[in-house]
Length: 266
Image (cartoon, rainbow, N blue to C red; front, side, top):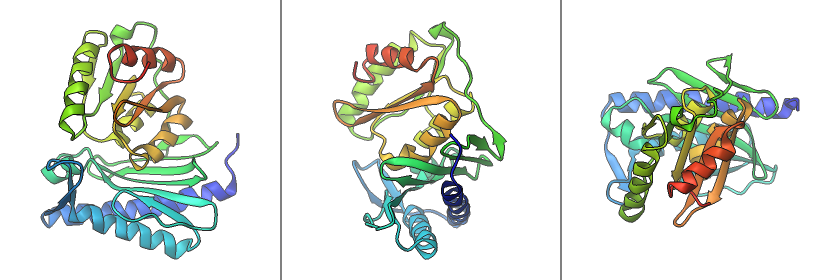
C-alpha cells in the first residue's frame, strides 16, 4: 500500500500540532503544575496542562480543518462531517509529567471512520518524535523504524505493561505480571501506553500488554507500530479493553502467553 496524498497531509498537520502542544506542556511544567481534577480514582489525575494542551490541539486542528470531528481525553467529542476524526491525548503519562519523570508524550492521530491513517507521538523530554501514515511506514525523528525479531525463546523476550488506577483491576494485573515474570526476560513499566507501543515499533520491547488504555492512548502509537511491522490488537477484557502489541512474527505466541498469565483473554 502507498500512502495517499490526503493521509500525508493529515500527517503534516498532526506533526505540527503535536509539536506545538508538546512545547506548551513543557513550558507549563517549567512554571509549576497543579492538579486540576481526578478521573477514575484519587490517583488518576488531570493537570491544568492536560486541559490547556488539548484546548490548543483542538483549536489548531479546527482552524485548519473545521469540518473534522474530534475525540479527546479531556474534552467533549466533536461530530464532524468530513469523515475524518482526530484522536487526541494531550499528555499520555500524566503522573510521570506531574512528578517530573521524562516518559510522557503528546499523541495526535487522524482516523477515517475507525481506521487510523496518520499519527504522531511527541515525547519532548526524551527528544523523540514517532510518526506514521498508512502505507508510508513509520519513523522516529525522521529515520525509518522496524520491529526487532525476538526469536522463538520467550524467555529472552523483554516485555512491558501498565497498571490501572482502579484497585481491583490493579491487584489482578499484579498477579498476572508475577506470572509473566517467570516466563520472559524481564518486565518494564514506564507509565505511558503510547511510548510503550512505540518502543515495540522501534525494537526496544518484544511485547506489550495492558488492560485499560483508551483509544486516544494508543491510536497514534498503534499506527506507528503497525507500519513498523508489529500487530496491535485490542480485545475486550473483564473490566476494560486490553491492548496487545508485538512483532507480527510473534504476536500470536505473545497473545497466548499473556492470556496464560491472566493479563488478556484467551
